[in-house]
Image (cartoon, rainbow, N blue to C red; front, side, top):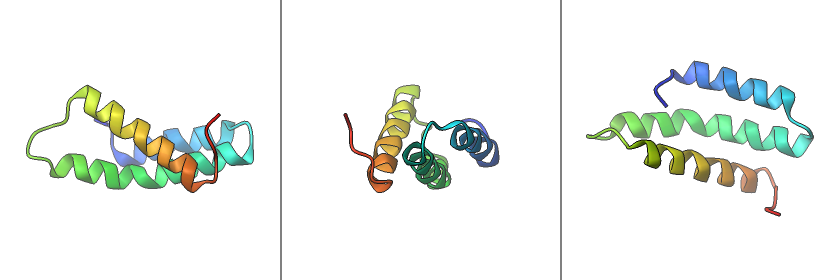
Length: 74
């Protein structure tokens, strides 16, 4: 999360383009829209999060993005 939000959005945009189907594209779009909020929350913390906390936050964000995009886990 040490990259600027715009750079992260560019990465996610590539994921959307390379996605295998519309469901996966929808998941990545929702995920990308949540990155700015996550980055703001990280910046607002008094102490920087650990690498593990960032990984957990991103994993949860991706799982929630899948739910919001209507994707069920297999």
